[in-house]
Image 1 (cartoon, one colour):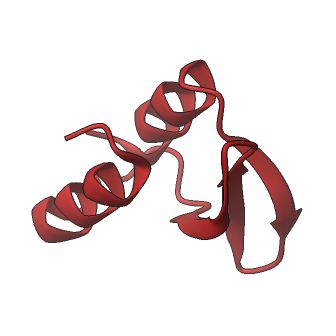
Image 2 (cartoon, helix red, strand yellow):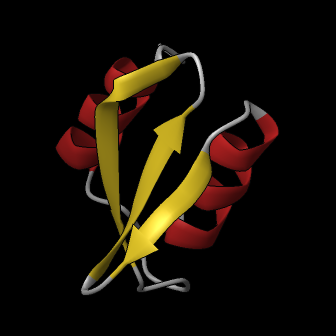
Length: 61
């Protein structure tokens, strides 16, 4: 999965960008204590381990 696809998936589930620096930091209104950093490499593939970790944090896996 590419970074851009992961961002769209998170945004469909209600996550939004709280701030941006080297990474986009996503938060969810129902889970304010969880912050998920996503790289800005839109066309690159997300490493499998990183993808699994992000999906678990977001409650999508």
